[in-house]
Length: 292
Ligand SMILES: [Zn+2]
Ligand SMILES: [Zn+2]
Picture 1 (cartoon, rainbow, N blue to C red):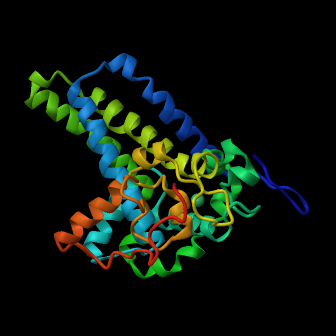
Picture 2: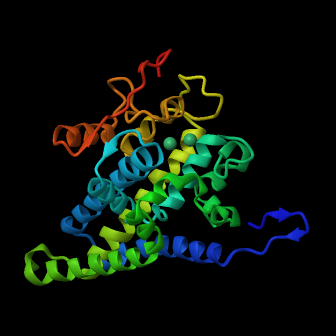
Picture 3: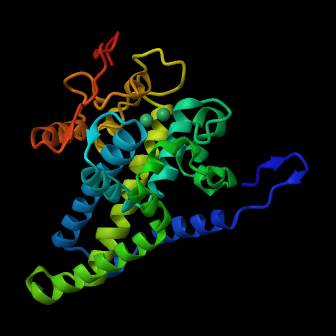
């Protein structure tokens, strides 16, 4: 994983080991399903956590914070950022800075997670276990530093995750105590609601970087390898229309034709109707030049 630099090999950052241990550990924790068993209650918790945190990443981290593709009040922005933070994909300023670098350097040697220049594994998750991932100090996210609440989320991100783990477990304990008919336990809710849900959300997000720069259609000549991919479009709440997104990065809508399901956009439209978000940006020319 070490990158060679002039003057000799660079020492691997301790953070690389920490991330690697956590990423492997979270996957192993998912095997806990064979020990804690299944209940529909635990499954429902996993789905709910997937939806809330997934939309926190797509609507919050990505479309709001990284691209400013719509407007939201400070409290609404904080709720989006909090939901994104709980997805265990790094603090908001770090995530946004890396994502903006990806748009700036798409599929070039400077793109830290391009499958074209770095390989599939590196683009999927390997990049988070390199020194480069932690050299990013958030310079690309300076505009967000005017929001102290986002800086706090970034600073106390690790504590937030520990609190989340504890709260999910305690929620499961409370369910088993007060609603024993549901047949669940604290550990079962923790494994399904937190670990399985987190790892599933991880891979759907990571596939936007790996799969959506490898397989799919390219209706727009964006000059990079970005693709539209139906499977990721559905699983990642609209983020799989990634060629559209590289063409119109400021658009709050990624699915640009009627059949390109874009759950995030429809959520934003719903929030707009409720008066919680506004000024949803759309491309002037919103249809692909050829069939997607
Ligand atoms: Zn991309
Ligand atoms: Zn983007």
